[in-house]
Image 1 (cartoon, helix red, strand yellow):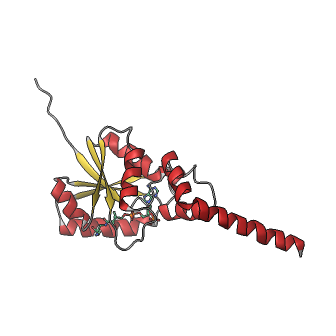
Image 2 (tube, rainbow, N blue to C red):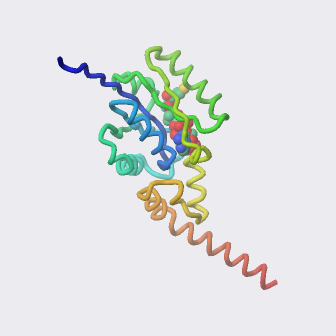
Image 3 (tube, rainbow, N blue to C red):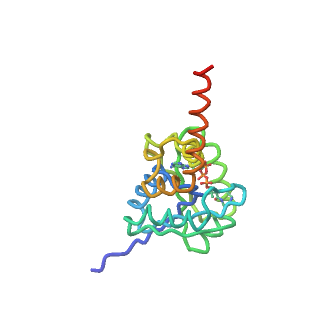
Length: 184
Ligand code: COA
């Protein structure tokens, strides 16, 4: 007898500016649960991303290339409209810390009010990454800190390329002001 196919698809949306190891952990775990996972990169008009949409898409594709059931796409406008257009009924969200809950709760209920047949599924992030966010990573990189422990290698390289000069200047300025303080 032919086995019944259970093509369960889900969408994991975010700005991914840039994608972190926390995002990747969530994507890998969701890819185990669902037959097909769409990582949907948001246009996001309210945030002013460091990486362009094309760069975020390319980085996301590079980061998930080892996962055959994961694809990367872009979207703008309401996430539920995108889900409906794709024929997907599950949105995956990560919960990092307790303080995420209220925001996520409101978002899930708003999405459900707009589209009752779209369900939000929450996964707890790995504790190692529960403190991470893209803006924290960007700040560390901007101030010349090391980001290897927070982001996939390809993102680390992209951050260095984008912020390299600025980070070197910041570190140099800091070194000079410390030197001045010692000399005085
Ligand atoms: N590991 C590491 N960082 C994580 C993480 C994880 N597992 N989960 C979330 N984060 C970070 C994100 O990078 C983000 O960091 P930043 O604010 O410093 O950029 C922060 O935590 C918040 O994450 P999230 O809430 O997922 O924000 P986002 O900007 O990445 O994505 C959208 C939000 C795009 C999914 C949401 O705004 C959306 O659906 N927009 C479409 C419009 C819409 O439908 N609006 C109605 C919603 S009710």
